[in-house]
Amino acid sequence: MLTQKDLLNTLKRIDGKGYGAYKDLQGQYQFDNYILFIDHVQSDPFAPPSRIRIRVDNLIASIPLELFSTKVRKIALEDYFTRQIANAIKKNNTRISGTGKSGLIAILPCAQEILERTSVVICEKYIEARISVGLPARGRTVMAKEAEKLFFTELPQIVNRSMLFKNIDGEKAKRQVELAEDQEYLRKKLEDSGIVAFIGNGSILPRESGVSDRPLKGKEVVPFESPKELEVCFELPNRGKIKGMAIKKGVTLIVGGGYHGKSTLLKAIERGIYNHIEGDGREFVITCESAVKIRAEDGRFIQNVDISPFINNLPGKQDTRHFSTQNASGSTSQAANIIEAVEAGCRLLLLDEDTSATNFMIRDARMQRLVHKDKEPITPFIDRVRQFHRELDISTIVVIGGSGDYFDVADTVILMDEYRPREVTAQAKKIAKEIATNREKEFTGNLSLSIQRIPLAESFEIKARKEKVKSKGTMSIVYGYNEIDLQSVEQLVDSSQTAAIALMMQYIKKKNLADGRTPLKDILVQVYEEISQKRLDIISPFYGQHPGDYSMPRIQEVFAAINRLSTLKIVHREGSQS
Ligand code: ADP
Ligand code: MG
Image (cartoon, rainbow, N blue to C red; front, side, top):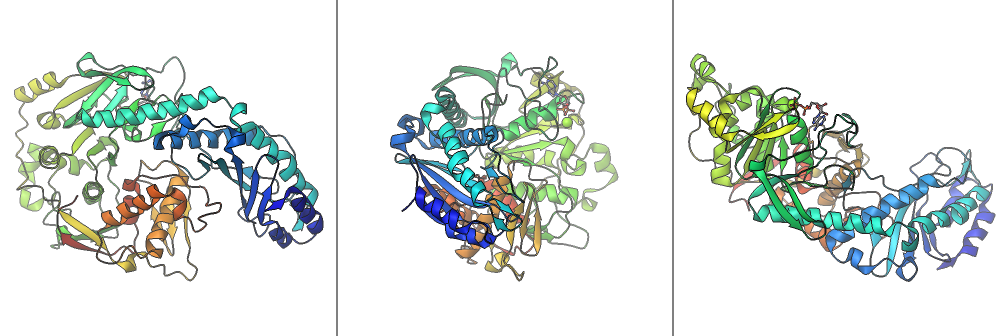
């Protein structure tokens, strides 16, 4: 191990030299309170920044063991420290000059979700932060004095303020850990109670704007309040009693006039698969962890999906048990999204009329009369939704303000009235009796969704000359010459998750996990198994060093990305899905 003095000496030696001389800094240095690892040095001041780690021994950091004694606690605490370090970086006011990214210090930025991340590691022995820095230069010339400020003034201050337990808000850290623990506990508890979603009383559901995920603030905000008929109470390990609205298994409609808060409620439920930080407003909006938002996505790529439960007799006699297209229609894309979600283990489908294909959702009696079944390839969702529940134990929550035909198939109807939910099931059933729809049921036979989809090895081959795989923001992955569009994968929320998905795809390729015999589901289960045994770090090519800035996606979103990879080649095998 090198010393601080060695670092100073090297800096002195390379001062004024070409930027490449910074490579000499790579190594490990013992500082007074921590070890500095310089893992990767950027190639020039404009290139992606250099990657360093700072490791503080827990004899010095003194982080209480009970704050990371279980997996959920550890994830929450690591997430908390990531936020603390980001704050300390923001507050720091040492000025470092230079070209390009000179003087930059950064850690993975966190949004409203508490996620498993690669940015901070906490274990009994130490806390380690994975940080990016821009090594200072004038033009392409090393500025050693500025680099010295970065390593000997700025970083020690940041470490001191944000990585030593005595200097952070320990109570707040404890609250985040206990909050995440309560959220996780409630999610398990719901499952045992036959509840697919829970919205705590007092929750704030609306967001600041379409682009901001922070809570809407102001007098006009109506906090959520459960109707008495749907209210349940749980006892949480840390918080104690919590009351709120329970949505049970089965088929639930959210109805109501336009602009009364239907989509806002569904959006909150969609995001209830994640744990949220204190103050978010959705801390106790908790949803079944495998819930998938289903929407129409015309133009999407589909590879060998059995959409026959919904689509049959397409013009041109396309086989819908093996349906592929470069350019799906609204209804075929929505059908494929459901079948793929089921394959990915989904137990709760979430649909909103705003983002659904009308002809996929409903066909009323008059249209049935005019367009004969032989000429209509689509079996609308209304005729399958009960079967999903009965035969596959998959529940549905659907926002529908435009068609009362759904009253016939609902177990529960919730009416949103000026952002306040009311339970109107009996009323809706009464209306359904009084005004018959005269629809004819259109389905035939059971839902058989037992096909396993097996990707061939060639699916993951990268034909581009340079093996380029990377994410662009949250909504896109570049895979060789192909770009995967994730705009419609609405439960993917953080660009660091998308970055992790890109790496997982590369990991599958590198380890030859797609061998032409293993179903996609099993491949991903294996990847997640390996991650849970070690850390998310293992998907990075820089395992053992600064792995990069990643957060854990759900398996459902990884599925979604792979299913949209246009080089995907799938064969089917009959069998039962586990
Ligand atoms: P719908 O789907 O019923 O047409 P939305 O859910 O899109 O309605 O909500 C309409 C508007 O009302 C949105 O701008 C949303 O931010 C706002 N809103 C939703 N819920 C609340 C609430 N509880 N308090 C205040 N404003 C809300
Ligand atoms: Mg809406």
